[in-house]
Length: 169
Image (cartoon, rainbow, N blue to C red; front, side, top):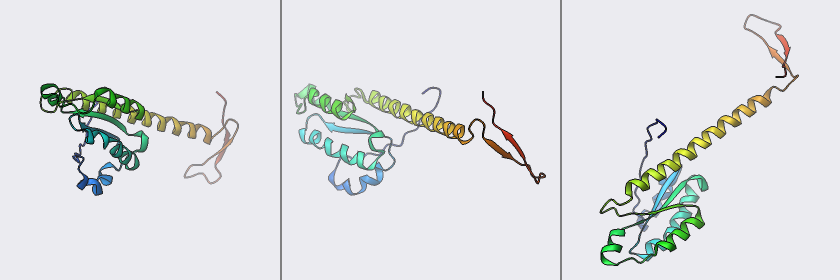
């Protein structure tokens, strides 16, 4: 992306209750997440709100890029097993400020797109934070020595030092 190689570390907690005790350690410091539910099982979608709250509590707060992913669309199409309407998921995603996509891991529909979209969001967010930090540091530096302030300059061999005034530009 932008001529840079992006590396991601992917953790799959499988959404299982038995992993709940250790997920906070996985979330800590996370800058992005795919929140995946099964379009054929309503309970997995209902639990998405709980997982999102836990993610936001332990990751980078609201700063983490999160994508809601409805998986197993192949079963919904082939066997008519859809239990979660696409519109319901889209409304939830919009309300929570999440990007949203439906996928099929079985036939690879939108899987690459989900990862690419999330990684792009993370890259942009991290880049914005880096730019903001650089700008803040430059502002701090500019405020450190104001126009007309005296600056004490001394060298290793100079016992008295020199005094100069900052110039206006």
